[in-house]
Length: 178
Length: 180
Image (tube, rainbow over all chains, first blue to last red; front, top):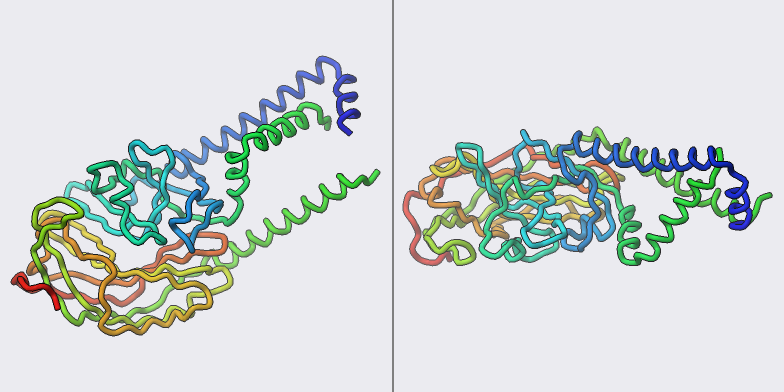
C-alpha cells in the first residue's frame, strides 16, 4: 500500500506538489486560528485542558477533558472548579474553590482543595503563599467530556507514538489527492 | 477493492461518529435542566473563639464553631446524564475587612445510585470556619445556603444554589473554653 502511495507521489508534477504543501499549511493555520479564536471567546489562555491527576476523583479522572472559560467581569465564587498556575510548577492544577474573601475595592483572594484530597491546597502553593488571586487562574471548568484526553496523555507518555501519528498524518495530507 | 484496512477504517469511523452523536444527544437532552431543589437548614449551636490559625498567619483570628441540621431531597436531580452531585454548605457574610466572605463548611459527594435524600441532625462541619480577620464576633448576619455542582457524564458543569437558607448571628462574647 505504501509503495503505491509513493508511486503516486512520484507521478505528481511540481504544481500539484506545491498545491498539497499549501493545503497542508491551510490545515495547520486553521487549527491555530480555531485555538486562538477560542482563547478570545472564552477569555482563557487555555480553553481546553486534560485532567492529569486523580485529585478530583470521582468527578474527574485522568484523561478527562475540561472546557474552560474565564470571564473577567464574573467574580470567582466557592464551589467553582478552577484551573490555576503556581509559581515554580509547570503543570496547572484543577481544584475546587473552598473559601473566598473579597474586599471593598474588588480585590479578592481564595483557597482551593481537591475533592479527593483530605486537606486544602496550602501545601501545594508556593512556599509562604496562603491564598490564590484571580491572576493565578487560567480558567474555570464549565464543560466536561470523559476519556477523550487520554489520546494526548498517551502521546506525551510515548513520544514515538506522537511522531509516528504526526508523520502518518503529514504524509497522508501531502500525498492524498482529491 | 475492500481490503481489511478499508473495512477496519470504515468500522472505526462509524463507531466513533455514533459515539460522538450519542454523547452530543446526551448533552443536548439535559442542557436546559435547571437542577433546582429546596433545602431546609438550621443551626443548633453557635460559638466564636479568638485563636491563632497556625496553618496560616500567627495572629489571632476569629474561629466560628457551629452544628447544623439539614434536610434536602436531591434524588430528583439525578437523570441519565448526572454522574455525581457535589453538595456543599456555604456560610456567606460581610465583615469590616471584606465586603463578601464565602466559606464552605461541609461538603459531600453523592454518586449515582447512592441515597441523595439528606436528613441530618447535629452535624459538625467538615472544615474550620476561620474568618479572614476578626469579623465573626457579634456578626448579626451570617447566611447558610446549600449548593450543588452537577457533574454529568458529558456536558455542562452547572452550579446551582438551592432555595431555602438560614441566617444566624454569632454571640457577642468569645468562648474561652474549648467547644464541647
